[in-house]
Length: 251
Image 1 (cartoon, rainbow, N blue to C red):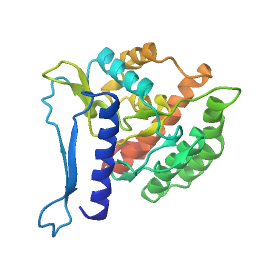
Image 2: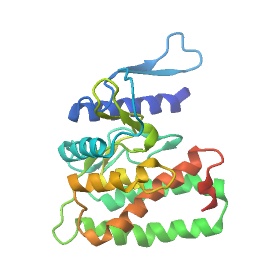
Image 3: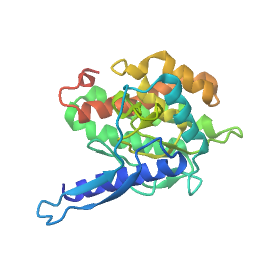
Image 4: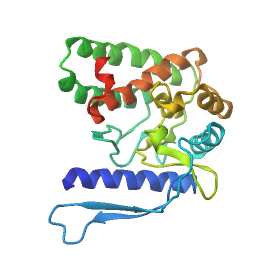
């Protein structure tokens, strides 16, 4: 509800719209969003196609094929990383509603904002120090090489929160589908950073192996696991912000 509710609904609608334009059927088709009639409570609605879902999460091969297809065929409207509206990962306003030709710069701002939201919740000098080290040392060390030495990194349209509860097999078609999206154009590997956490069934190696058959690791290949761990921080810190009693608070 309120201004925040308006922005959340708009962000998800635009995310669904962008994905549906590239990969029809992979998400429920968005129909409309807006304010509710006689809106004294400032409530907003999002109307989208109904899907009857079967198995959750989706089958590894089917999910990997559709997700990789989205990553491969999507094109940033500006050629840069970012998005044209703010999108929300639960209660976190993602700092991605701007365009940047540097993935390291955009991701650094995105992760830095998540860390700033988490700091008062943890009240931990050790966490603060690790955040500073990660942003100043780890992010540039792992992400700048993706666009150095003649390497070109394609901005791909990503789900933004691809975990067990946001993917399933469509009961009618038997194909993989995704929902509850918070998209932006980023490094395709960002989407599978969320698969690293043991709390998710998508942490089964079959999912990552199937995905890497569709899209091999970006160069430098030897940094893949470290990048995956770095990307997982956005989701693990997000988990402690969004889920009361999250065990991620113990990290």
